[in-house]
Image (tube, rainbow, N blue to C red; front, side):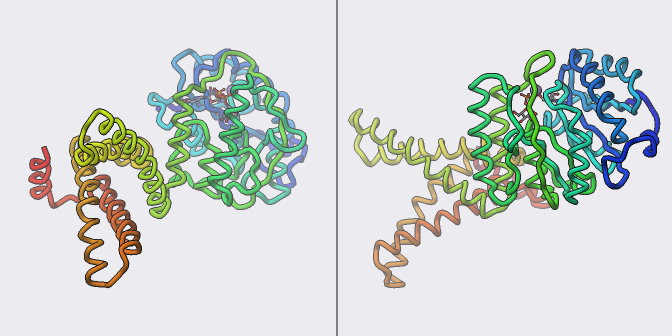
Length: 400
Ligand code: GDD
Ligand code: MN
């Protein structure tokens, strides 16, 4: 990462600014940019017009551009009465969210405001966000499109509006407590106290950095200010369908931080496996196969389906500990062992503990499910322990 201070200097003389904030503070405005050269001059102009006279500020751009955005910032910054910094990243780790966290780490003020670089977020609101946070003694102030006085005027097209609405609803229902009091968890415009940012626990992934902060940093005291989402000044949105998939992965990652939640998702994925399993059984028997071999084959279809979903969603970040063939073999072994263990277990429960067949089956289902989850975590997706290398390589050979 190259770190350039374009306009070095102090944060201005606080005495020179009208006190909109009860206690004299300052703000670091963090702007993530990806090929926004046509917007920079206008954005810095709008910030110059509306922020420094009310609140001392500095601007930190975190740039992943492949165009000349950094040079444009360089030039435009020379006319700015506040320090402007560009952090250009060679690798866009974590995308927009990763960029924002880098900017937050570089921030020098008590308050950080995050805003887009395309003028969709009005800079005139920056001092108000901070002042509201100070007045309410809040750790986080969200600029919301969904409270009285706000609007999503600039959200282009009914498709984007619908997607945004569904995403907001889904996210709020997944985190009812953490997002209590946040009507617009998808907003990319907010103020947060630097002391509330716990950068070491953050795992930003794509666009929804506010969601990441609200769920993992859990700032104390959250309040909102309405805002009107403007039209883009120039250029086009950088959001793609791929970004949508990244958002879903982000949601799953946030929601499955605890083992219990992971087990529930593991179970839900397992339930969806019934669909390919039954469809396979139907197709194979319809093609004339005897139902017993068809059962066994169709079960493999369900196993493969579950494995794919678990790999893509649940344990995506934990795939690197083993080769994919090793993981596939281990997962398939565990899933099939599940079937083999269940029948003897039911027999044991009935014969030795005198249980009825139905409760014994239910209990055996629960036991083998938990065992399968624990086994999958421990044997397929946990880092290999150092010091048992000899044993491990034998295992690896025997499965290939
Ligand atoms: N550094 C960096 N890296 N910046 C990025 C990247 C990236 O990978 N991707 C996008 N950006 C920057 C853009 O250059 C822009 O300044 C800002 O992030 C927002 O990107 P847009 O592409 O303009 O996003 P949008 O308008 O579709 O979405 C905005 O509004 C949504 C609400 O509807 C964002 O604020 C979203 O976070 C928000 O949910
Ligand atoms: Mn935008």
